[in-house]
Length: 436
Image 1: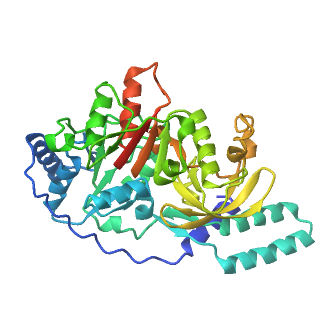
Image 2 (image 1 turned 120 degrees about the horizontal axis):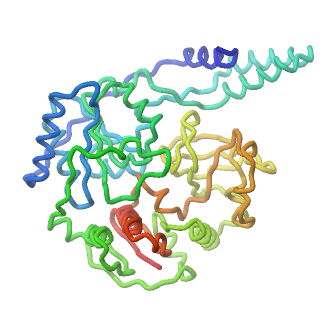
């Protein structure tokens, strides 16, 4: 173990221990009787739960929108004598589960804990650094600088007092973005996992899908009449089965109202009234982000306070993940190739991190990101404007009001296009506006 590795290990052990969180409240059983397919899922889960082994810790129930996954899960967990916890990959998805009566939180907040900068350690290291510089010991000075940088960053590691240790079951939904590293961390708690999935959605982005790539233990396929009365669910069925998709506005509790607009016709009321804009191509995404920023009154390439950003890559140590939404609090410092930005995450945490400029400058300098060398990105977090994002990036999240821009993505591949349309449509909870 190197000196810096030993320093990191020692620093981790010096952090104060956290108190365990109290177990979550039990979920009430649904008032409706389960359909045969749902009852079979419940029975097969119970058999697995009673006879599970350490070599088979995951049970997967997959189902299309409208097949009653939530009803089935509520019935399953209401019969479990013990502590059941609920999780999702993103903050948005955990809120949707909460609205469904499942008290979910993000996986990150459940299994990781923050390690905060230690002021006493910082003071000691800076004293040692000053002494090393006076002695012209460059090697020692560089090592001390690395230790100071590490100490002064907010890091995350597995929470050795997570409430998951007290759980009898963890239910996970919208987890297509979970990678193998996070799955390994989840399995290290040695708790059974009930994973929900939707085979109609796009396959996960490369490097993710550790929980959803395997074959489900049971698949719910029957869409119930009551669900089909919801225009958004009905539309998702049409998309999945290859039927014609009208360009209209749909509300989960009402009838569609015709909408005919082009990209240039996106008004301030349209854009600011939506929780999220989705599309297929990155070129479209950049155009929509530019259009949104203009009508919202934001100028220049540098993100301004209040702007929405999306994280483009994982950094578990910094507590940020691919697809996480953040709001700019302020730009602390600006340099030629990067910025120090203070952000509020969708988990309501305030963080400060060095952010690569290229993704923002690329709006005026196309191709800039591709021209970078690997060392240009080293030690830099990557964000972009998050008003419009691709459907691929939207996986694992849902919003009340979604504008879905059909830019003819994947028209050459009908099976994948169906999944793309279906995934985009099912990101909307209350209102969906389909435009082209």
